[in-house]
Each structure stands twice: as C-alpha cells, then as structure tokens.
Image (cartoon, rainbow, N blue to C red; front, side, top):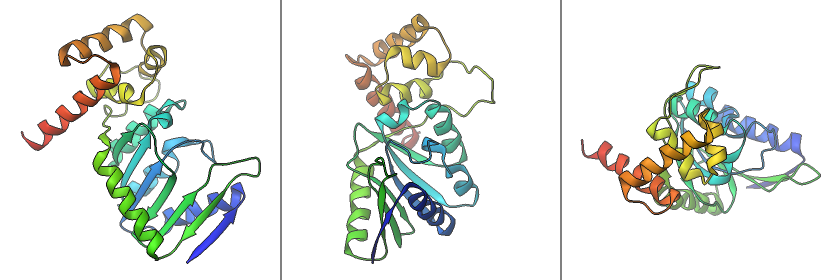
Length: 216
C-alpha cells in the first residue's frame, strides 16, 4: 500500500504517471521547492484540457516564484479551482481518491516521496485536504493575458497578490507597473474595504467576491 520513491527523476516519473492516469479529479497541496523548477503550471493545463477536475490549495510562498501569477491565471482560465493559505503542512497530490503522492522536501539527493494506494492513510489525507479547503481563501486572478501584453491592474489580480503576501515592489513587478502606481492601487483597495493591513484587504475582498458569486 505504501511505496517509497527516492531521487528526483523517480519522483517526477511517479508524479507524471499519477497525472496521466487520473480520470476524474486531482487534489493538490502546492508549496515550493519544485523538483522540476516549473512551479504551479507544471502539467496542470494539459490535465484540465483532458477534462480532469483540479482543486489546488497554494501556500502563499508558491506565489512568490517568478512568473507564478501568470501561470496561475492560465490554470484558473483552464478551469482549476484555486485557494490559498499562509502555510501548508505538506506537499501532496491525490488522484481520484485511489492514489496519492506525498512529496518530501527535496535535498541534495533530489528528495523522496511516498506513493500511496487505497489505505487508511490515503483516506486520512483526503480528509485533511477537505478540511484545509474549507478554511482556505478563493484565489481568482484576472484571466490570463496574451504573451508580451501588459495587462491593466485588475481587481482580482491585485487581491491574489495581496493574499500571497508579496512586498509592494514584488507586486509592482508582477503587475508590470511602477512601484508608486502599485502602492496607489493597494491603498485605494484598502481604503474601500476599511482594511488596516494588506493581507486583511485581500481576505475581505476575496470573501466579498465569494458572497457576491453565491448571492447574485
């Protein structure tokens, strides 16, 4: 029921196989570091195009990776349901409730993982995911823009960045605007919500959008 896999290439091969064999849904707890360096988009869009549902909870630090926001926009546009939490306890993939891959932090040897087949531990990890999903905040950046296009500062995009905990400088880089422009947009959003901190503004805005979606 449990298989320990060691080494970067072996772990990646098991992960690719898990995605290829998924038929209905992939659940993921996503956090860095990444074995293949590709971050959040690795294999995700192809999976969604096959009609496999995807629910992913991102640790805030995963959104600090270069190009992470653009990759997340592509995934959400393709149909991924994304949420965010400040921290996650582990890095995990679950496929169809039948298989799981628990990835340990990579080390000099490339890391290791535990492949799980139907067992009590797999069920427990499924319950862990659902509990974290209920407490996580929806993460819905604006639709992905074409390459080399400088998108306008969008409300959802700014919310996603505030939830990620990035600095003002990093937010400006992700938005493709100047530092002072980013600060003005952040200040305007915080003032409109009566929020005292940037993260509080992101939380309140995300929850307000979620209420509006459920109560049109």
